[in-house]
Length: 229
Ligand SMILES: [Zn+2]
Ligand SMILES: [Zn+2]
Ligand SMILES: [Zn+2]
Image (cartoon, rainbow, N blue to C red):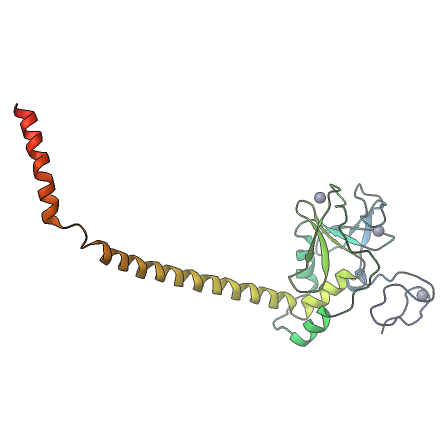
């Protein structure tokens, strides 16, 4: 169990806001050792609070900028950034902990925000809602062109899911689906070959060669007549 970063009171379960002093807990970036504020006001706008997001540097080997809202602690990642962050933050996961994954998937999500679509911090178009990694249980908001929004607390959930081997599990499942598709394709191809073989044997005996010649004879005769007349 963790304690409130402000008043030290114990936090129960998956609570993100302290019951006593109402301080919102920064559970996401606590997992990343340090970050610095690069720009306090970016041009990007928080889809929850409608205030400018700040640009922060996570110092992952090199400069690594993401946007963050100081009020709701939501995070915005450019395309590919979250994957890069997960790769650095979570290494050496070779097995999947199915029990832990099931637990994580069934965690009750806080109903802090109303269900619905929110604006992309960049283009202000409504983002799509996606289940991160198909079944992590984290519903992220994604703009196809600009990136991914995670509400406060969701990065930790994604990290926990990846640590339990969720990503591995997801990739394994994808592979299995691809294999099934390949098998199906192979079967379809075999059916086609058999089908073609059958239709070929059915069609061959139909045109009788003798009749064919007989039909041609009068035509040739007419042609010869025309040529030498
Ligand atoms: Zn507190
Ligand atoms: Zn916000
Ligand atoms: Zn956008």
